[in-house]
Image (cartoon, rainbow, N blue to C red):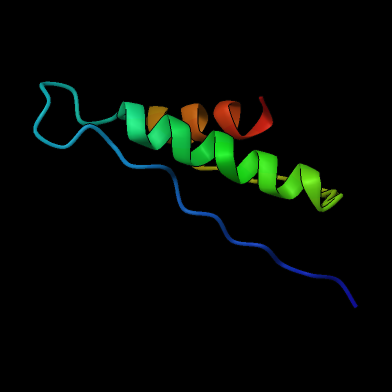
Length: 64
């Protein structure tokens, strides 16, 4: 049986002129989650993400 892993985007830039981007904290959150998955040997057959910029930035940071 497969496993479904749900991940919400990192913290967005609340109060900024452009809310649809990660804050510095949000970027760190996603990088840390990527490290967590990597240290545990987690591999994924597919990744789906939303179309917002903060979704893309979250996935990019996670993959770093």
